[in-house]
Image (cartoon, rainbow, N blue to C red; front, top):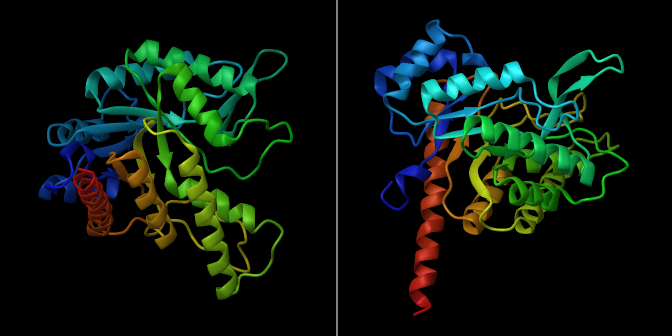
Length: 313
């Protein structure tokens, strides 16, 4: 779009069912994103497709395996594989999550949870994150982005508000924040629905409004200048049988998430935005339509800011 820089155009995740269609049509996109760990092998068809796509699009490597919040430290083998992939692909961005997945037994054996587990918002956890992010950035010789988590539990010793915790991580390590707007809404929705069994339409509408307010407050609490990428995704609305809202990336972006996204663009400016969709994948055109919607919102925010700046003179 002419109203926003090409670097801020929305991108989509490159998933196997869409390989052929994407490469056949090469639709205009700001970038494509892949999960780093899926391409750690030294060869194979998947890496060949990614290499071919890299000739047409910038690539964002988004990881789920660094376990940046682990007190036992990073997995050196995992970091080595990521470094080789970074060297091979030369990605536009590298990111992972503010979480832990690894732990060490008293005897020294390390176990992996195969999940993204939340860290406590404490000074000790912040020190661990900063140390591990520093190690990754030194190994990769580039700054990385760290994503806020969709979390389904909290800790009694939490002592730092999450926005302040993430801002401190960025300021101390030099990393940037990957702001997942959908995660903010999911966390807010689960917070307001805690202990509730009702899922009627009126209650859900009220809950979504409250979750949006929670997410907006989070956005406003973050200092400008920290966000380097934004994620959007869809979640399944709760039902009588499923009260917990899971960030499953299996649906179109909810209206409340679009509203918070618009506020984030106004606060942080035009940022690269990813449309995540990992389960129940639709046709490629659905993802492209969602990406265009993000571009429209970004362009509208840019136009509004330009108009406001013009009126100041």
